[in-house]
Each structure stands twice: as structure tokens, then as C-alpha cells.
Length: 260
Image (cartoon, rainbow, N blue to C red; front, side, top):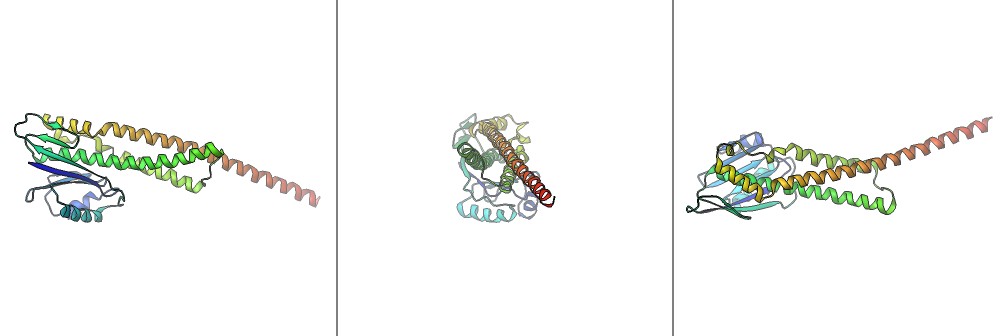
């Protein structure tokens, strides 16, 4: 037996509460930030996360497309990036342990709890990829301004555009901080050694923790660049104000001499 799983980043976030209220299926497990469905009548599984990721198991192309369109009505902002990841679960009753590979995991038998752990890790991986793309864009744009400083000794960016850039950086970082829980282990692994082992192997396979640390490091680089840009802009504004004061004093002296 083989189950195909696919995780897709659809939006920046979902309204989980509203989705749960309107999706006509019994919840297998969930919280305010995620919800997992075991649709046993057609052997499908669905895992929805409030950070905009949906994970499908045993969905064909048509059913997946219909579900994605349905999910978009609960999205706050659609992500226009092709971010998805596929994985497989293969059963082999002769096994006495879990075997995790790059694109599949082999287990003795499949149940809803095991599926949930696998789908959770794939969802986390896609979410991290989304944030990696966003931070790459921020670093690329900051490199442009750094190159400009090196070549011309000044920044051509306006104060308004710099503030917009700062806002974009802070928005990305806040989004990541808000979703720090994606690295947390689910409660069901605490009392089940087999699921705990599977969860740890999958985290290692998808490089969940190293990727998050790298993400945090790159965001810190961008923040340091922002501090530099802000200082340069403040110096530029101070110099401009100094010239304005000098001109006003000069005008005052000229007017005083003229009337005297």
C-alpha cells in the first residue's frame, strides 16, 4: 500500500475557526491553529494550518484543485508562488522499524496518527520554504542598496520607500515569530515512542531545525542592514536640516542689513 502526500502553500494565513465551522466533515484532531481530517469514506486525509499551508493525502488532481479553490475563500492573502512538496508513505508488514528516506517513509502499518505526523512535517517544510523565499528577496534588495553605498557613498532611496522596506522586513519577521509553534512537537508523540522516533527522523530528513536557524540568521543580517540604512538616512536628513538653518540665518542677516 502506498499513500501520496502533497503540501501546498496557498496563502499567508487561513481563518481556521471559520473553516472548521463551514467544512462539512468531522474533525479528527485540531486546535485554534490547525485542523486534521481523516475522511475515511474515500480514504483521504486533509491537514490545514493557519500559516497558509494545506496538506493532502490520497487526493487526486481534481479533488485537490477543488479543495484549493474552496480554501482560498478562507485566506487572508493568496501566495503567488509555486510552493509545494510531495512525499510518500509505503507499507511493508515485514518491517519492525520505521525507515525514513528523502522522498518516502516505509512503515509496517498506517494509521491516522502516523499520517498526521508525516503530513505535519511536510507542511512545516513548505512553510519554511515560503519564508526562505521572502528572506532571500529581502537580502537581495538590501544588497542593491549596499552596492550603491559602496559605489556612490550614498543612498538614492527616499525616506518613504525606506520606511516601506522596513515595514516589509518587520512584517516577515513578525509572521515567522507568530508561527514559531510550527517547530513544536505535537502532543501525540509524547506518549508514543514509535511516533516520537518517526517525528525526529522526519525533522532531520527535512532539515527543519537547521533551516529555521538559518532563516533567523538571515533575518538578523537584514535587520543589521536596516539599522545601517536608517543611520545613513538620518545623517542625510540632519545635513539637509543644517543647510535649511544656515540659509534661514543668512536670509535673516541679509534682511537685517538691508533694513538697517
